[in-house]
Image (cartoon, rainbow, N blue to C red; front, side):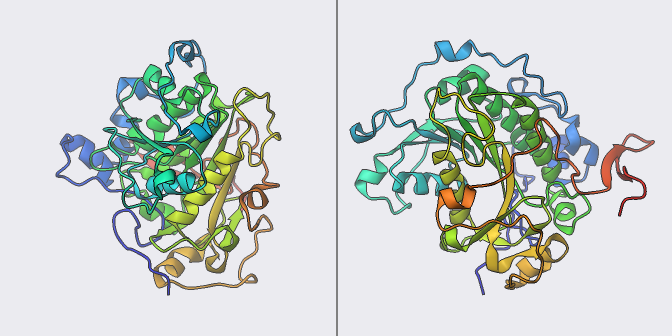
Length: 394
C-alpha cells in the first residue's frame, strides 16, 4: 500500500490544502474565514492586501502595468555553462511541492529561482550534486504582499513561472494566496512577457457537490479560491500571444518516492482522479515549464505543448471516478484500466509525450462548476447556496 499522509496538507479525501491554526497572527475574523466557520468571509468579505486585490469575474487587463518590465533589473545569477538559458521561477518553493519543483529543475540542469516569503531557501536536503545546487538561486517573493513592480522585476527574463504557493498559517488565507496571489503573479507574468505560467491547483475544483470539494472547501473556502483564481487567469490570458498558462490539478498528494512520468495519467474534464506523489507532480510542472516557447517568440495557443490547457494528474493505477476516489485514496486502493474511462486519458513516458495533444481551454471561458448542473449563488439572506443552474440536466 502506498504511503499516504493524513495531515493538514493531505486531508483524508486526498487533495492538498493547508489549514490556518488559531495561533497564527491573524485577526479572529480572518481565522474564522480560513477555518470555514464563516462561508461569507471565506468567499471574499476579508479583502486581501491592496497590492493583490482582485474580484473573481473582474480580472480586467487594463491595470497590467506593461511599462514596469522596462524598469526591471535582472538580478538572477546562473552558472556560466547555462548562460542564455532562461530560469524557471518557482513561487511557494518552501512548500512540499514547490521544493520538489526546485529539485527536479536543478537535476534537469535548468537555472531555477526558488521564491519564498522571506527569501530563505536551503537545498541541502534535496540530494543535489554541487553542480546541480549551483543552478538554484533563492529570492524573496511573497505573492500576497509583493507589489506588481517587485514581481515583474523578479520575473524579468524568466522562461516560465511555476505557482506552487497556497494558503498557510503564516503565508495568508486562500483568498489572499490561492486567488489574489495567483492573479497578481499572472498579471506580472504578462507584464514581464514570461512565456508560460504553470499553476498547481487541485482535482475536483469544478465539482462543488463532489465529496472531495465539499470536504476541502471547509478549509477556509480553499477550493472556491482556487477555481476563482484559475478563472481569473483564463480571462487575463484571453487572446494573448507570446504567453500562455497551464493548470495542473493533482489528485491526492503523497510523500512517496517518484514513480516517474510513465506511471502518470492525465485527464481533462475534472471527472477522474487518484493519488500521486508530490515529486511526480513537480516533474509534470517542470516539464511543462521546459516545453514553453522561448521568451520573445511569437506564439499561438497551439505553438507549445499544453498551451492554455487544464488537466488532472494522478498515477494511472490509482484512477477512479470522483465519486469513488476519496475512499480509494484513504484506503490506498489500486484500479485497472476498465474501472472508469472518461475518454480524455493521456499517458507518455517522457514530458513531451505526456503533454502532447492536450486540448486548450475554451478561450476566456470560466471552468467554475463545469460539468455540474449546480453552481454557487447568493441566498435570500446573503449567504452562499448551491442552486441548479441547468434545469432538466442530469
